[in-house]
Image 1: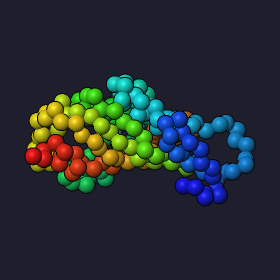
Image 2: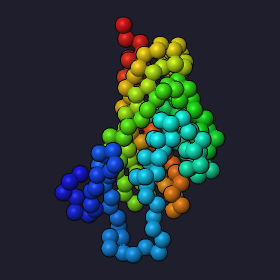
Image 3: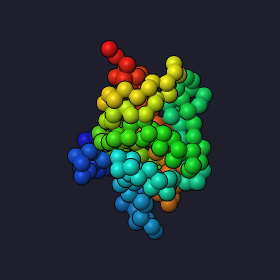
Length: 177
């Protein structure tokens, strides 16, 4: 992301590059916008530290979450509407990989949007539903690479989230001989 004359890059605490751009470069806003990269990092910390309920407080009541393209993207897409479904989805993931820890590989922020590329490492201790049936707990540790795209409201709450995961790799890691 170097060489971007529209914004400046600064390293994040974990060595992750965050890029900030603004259409109002040099303007003095009436109210400072929330630090969206910090909110995204907090999502990951809450997940990794088994504090899923805290993530519920960070989203709008009517948040929409599309996983792998949403419910219309069969066979592995899903859509979750509202805070309760969002929290239930996260708890479901954590139930499959209870020791799951997330590391951000890169965060990019522009306006009211943020994109994050991350890695989840965890041991499968719960049943994992797949389009081809349920994979019973294997005790195997997986490394999942994924990306998420957030849209925030003016208060810094997530109103839309797109989650894209490499499910085929996860299934392969759990079922390969």
